[in-house]
Length: 455
Image (tube, rainbow, N blue to C red; front, side, top):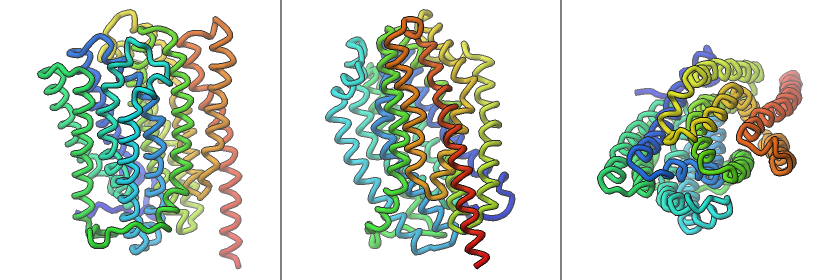
């Protein structure tokens, strides 16, 4: 069945939502399956098992997102080739991308497995959590090799408009994850180590399915082992686009690691409560993140064809989508925060901190979405470093000032509520800067293209 979609003509708002909805469902499925990890641990694991997993999330993101960000380079480059129907270029991008995924996956898996405990100690993980967290991380990092193959493969499929197959593959691997969670945690009493092993197995399943899909592809590209060679020109282009995107994620993660280190000073109940809230916040964020992926694919294709009118429409439509999806997901969260938190919070003393953080962030998450979409648009019009620089100034700078200027020095700010407010403040500052820059860059680009057409 034909799954490819054109990004440069027709009803773009309709196409963007058709493209985005399977992505959002994929993100939600991934989160639901991760949530099942925590629910199984809450029911059948030790007292601190949930906190042991959630307290690793900022650290994992710091390491993983840099390399997953490189797959953005694959998505942009493939979308540009697809936009101008350059099959030869698209074919070489596919092969180079998959080689990159293998190399990066092997490196990150080995690094994370060897240094997991050292990384946790650098994050000031409490003694009550560190053994459990280390046990989980080691197995989690084994699965990163397969995660990279899936992410690069799905970036290729998304670039030609196919967001359905990655969704199906995640659904299958997620069911596998749940089954093995119960086998390892409930039956074999392996606690968080069992969750880590189940995650690694499910990642392997998703990688296998994406590889099979690439081999069966017969439309814009195909996959042939005899032609499976890496072209350094493609690798260079992917890295030039993807590494700044990865570093932008790293900036977020560095600030989150710093914040998590500060939260770790506030006691076990705050750690557990904040971690529980962050799991629910992830459901809100996934709609924003997938809108960014939609925006960058559509804008990249139209950038390749010099269609500035479509780029402007896509940028505005992306903002509409952020507001619509945020109303849905944040609205549900604000209506039933306690019911949602009950899935994750094991002790009543952790419920207060969890609810406090969740309400603040759910009410302001649209700012994060607007900021990310604007950064994606800047990157898609061929300014890869600017979003990273602006994010470093806006996000990391604001949060560092807050943590080391206020949290560490004034008792009235030494609490979870104050830490939670540092998120929307940093989002607002960064979005304001990015929007100004995008308007300037877009107008320069448009005027250049108009002048070239006139000549």
